[in-house]
Amino acid sequence: MLKKTHNLFRNSIREAILRCMKDDKNVILMGLGTDDPKGIFGTTKDINKVFPKRVFDLPTAENGFTGFAIGLALAGKKPIITHQRVEFSLLSIDQIFNQAAKWNYMTAGKKNVSMVIRLIIGKGWGQGPQHSQSLEAIFAHIPGLKVVCPSNPYNAKGLLISSIEDKNPVIFFEHRWLHETFGKVPKKKYRVAIGKGKILKKGKDITLICYSLTVLECLRASKILRYYGIEPEILDLQSLRPLDKNLIIKSAKKTKKVLIVDNGWSFYGISSEIMSLIHENIKSKELRIERIGVLDTSIPSTRALAKHVYPNQILIIKKVGNLLKKKFKNLKKFDDNDFYSDQPYKNFLGPF
Image (cartoon, rainbow, N blue to C red; front, top):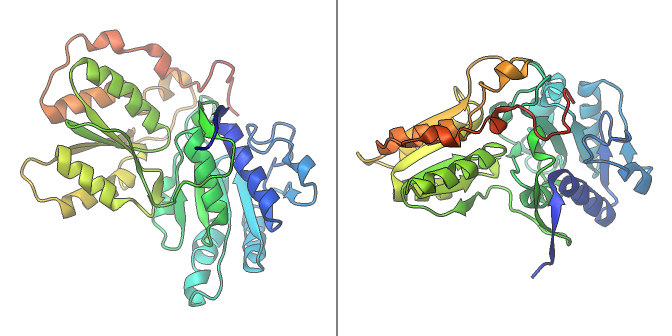
């Protein structure tokens, strides 16, 4: 058994990069602020001191340096690009969608673009409508890309190692609120398979499907639901493309009640795809499905408004009540304002 130690999510990201760079001289780290003293929220801190010739700060020219990274990948290198916000990557969409995702197909498998693009997503007061979005659904729509969303320090390290070693371009989404979360992480190198989800908690009454930050909200909600005698089954998707379809269908068949908690907007999103998947594979009059996600609006800059935009534990519990046709008395006593502060940890002063 691997020895485990408590670790921060951001340290798990850093450990995965360091380990892969030590094991494979072709791994290269690049991005705006990669060698900055803060190291992109601590995830790349001092890696440039260990590998001074393989860590590059880059100019603010996202489309150009993404094309440069694709060229490196085609030449046998394994670049890791890091964007401090997902929105910055939008300037390189043509390179990602029309080049990185399609080279393997266009060359009949003779050429691979083995690269990882780390995109930091999600809320945090002060980010405003242009820097707080979760755009996983856009990238998951494209054939040729793999898309993963870790939710804890353990699968962050394992998924990133698997992503770096994968022959395909992998979009690696990190939620800003997760960087300071703790978890048990093996010291040694290990992998979490891309395309496989995980049952975090087994249950019989309802299936909660979640990923990234919404996993934490579902875990919080599950503790309160048990108080009311409800045993939810919680699925952490971990990967959005490929999606672990068998895991989803198996759990939905068992409970016949499903709530999908989307990390982004639910309209035209990940939750829509999962709802379609379940309905296409399960024909039962008992089946009931609902979804929740970020409110269908741009994200406000102020905490006073932003905290009302995101799905939270109380909303999850209310939706579970609707699906199970149950009313939960005295739910207000669990309505803790600390969960709605739109602040990932006490020292976070925004916007970055």
